[in-house]
Image (tube, rainbow, N blue to C red; front, side, top):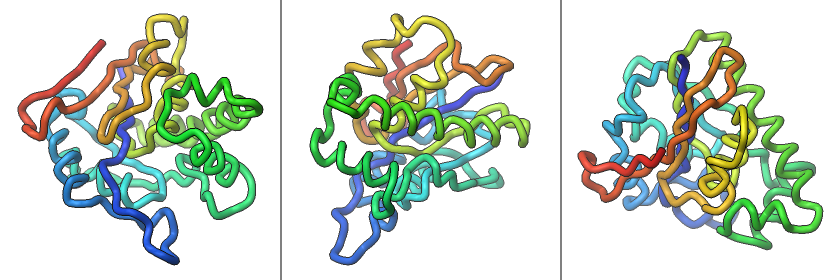
Length: 208
């Protein structure tokens, strides 16, 4: 059985004037949030790490895992560049309009479903490629709130019902995510919610 864990980044600094969105780093609080996941049972045994091109996502996944010696890769498709025409700009416009609301609210917005599901379809391809080509047993990915939900939904095999509340009725908090068990086709057959209860790395919240 293979595993995939997708984690939203920790708290990031406000973008400075002239700074690219990808350059925003974690604040001191964001670093603490990421470190609070270190040793989480659902993040253990990672033999591959990846993230979007955003520095805050990269730093989060490195701090939250025992990454020494583990291959790290950037997957640009996980966060399409909002400064470029196309999907990145469309997604950014949706986020600016709706903010941190549940994914279900995004999907109900006029014209949004096509953009969101197009992102999800595009985003899972490189994730599956890296797992298959590198023979990974557990890939941990640093990502973003709305995007993490969409990717988990796209990977899900079977009825959505048991996971509808988890995927559509919540907007992931900082350093929260989804842990998935994958079948031979690299489809998720089980999803668990991942979060640290406090900044104490010995206390966790894992909801099947």
